[in-house]
Image (cartoon, rainbow, N blue to C red; front, side, top):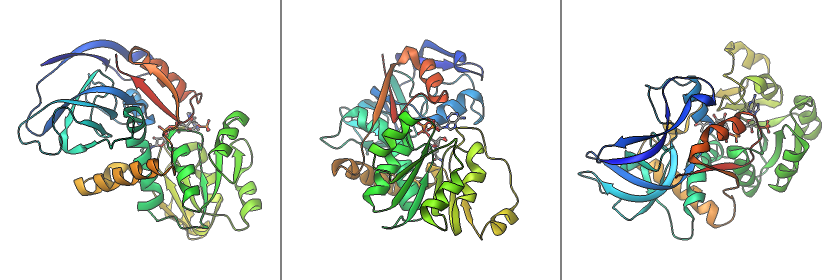
Length: 324
Ligand code: NDP
C-alpha cells in the first residue's frame, strides 16, 4: 500500500468540490501497474467528471492522463516493468502523486521524449490522431474547420493537419489566441464572434470538407452551416455544453451531411490500436509535425484553479499538473 497526495471529489459541482487530500492506494492487483507520476495531463473531460456531466462513482480522484516511472506491477503484467518510463490516457485517478491502472493501457515513452510531453500528448494527441487519421483520413488539399484551435486538442490538430497538407481554418475567441493559431500554421483564423459560416464560404467557396468541433453546443449549427455538400461534422466534445438533439432530416436539408460523435476510447480499445496511436503521436512529435505545446503548469494542490482557467477559456495549448 502507498499513501499519496491526491485530489478528491466527494460531490459533483464547481471547482470548489476538489479537495487536496491524501489517500491510500492498494498494491497492484493482477494486470495493474503502480506509477510514481512525474506529470499529469489536464483535460476538459476531467471537468465533466467533476460536474457530473459524465457520471462517476463518488468519492473519486479525477484525471485519466499522465506519465511517470513504474514503481510496481501486479501478477501477469508483461507490457511494462518497474523502472520503465510510461504514459497513459485511460488510467483512472491521475490527479495524484501515484496512479494505479491497467498495465496494458500504459505505453513506454520513447527515448528523446520528455515525460511532460508524453503526459500532454497521450489523450490530446491521440484524439487528434483519431480525428485526422481514423474517422476519415485527411488528404492533402482537404479543407478543415478546427474549433478551439488554440486549445489542447486544437493546437495539436492544427499543426498535424497542416503537416498532412490540409487547408486549415482555425476558430478561437480572442485576437491573442488567434496569433497562436496562426503561429501553429493555420491558413486562416476566425473569431467565434464572427459569422463563421459566412466567412468560411468566402474563404472556400462551397464550404469545408470537415468541421472538427470540440466546442459542442454553441458551435453545432455553425459547424453544419460551414460544410460543403456531403461534408463531415465531427462533434467530439462539450466545452460549451452538450449538443442539443437534432433530427436526421437536418443533415439532408443542409446538404446530405455526415455526422459522427466519436470518443477516443472506442478507437483504442485493443492493445494493437493503442500502440498504433502512440506510435503515430510520438512519431509525429519526433519529426516535428506536432508539438506538446505546454501553455501552463499548476501544482497538484492548485488543480481547482487549473479547472477554473480551462473552463474560463484562459488556457492555451496543453496544461500540465505537477504531482507533489
Ligand atoms: P481545450 O484546451 O481545447 O479547452 C477548451 C476550449 O474550448 C477553450 O479554450 C475555448 O477556446 C473553447 N470554448 C468554447 N466555448 C467554451 C465555453 N463556453 N466554455 C469553455 N471553453 C469554451 O480543451 P481540451 O483540448 O482538453 O479538449 C477540447 C475538446 O475536446 C473538449 O470538448 C473535450 O471534451 C474534447 N475531447 C474529446 C475527446 C473524445 O474522445 N471525444 C478526447 C479529448 C478531448 P476558445 O476560447 O478559443 O473558444
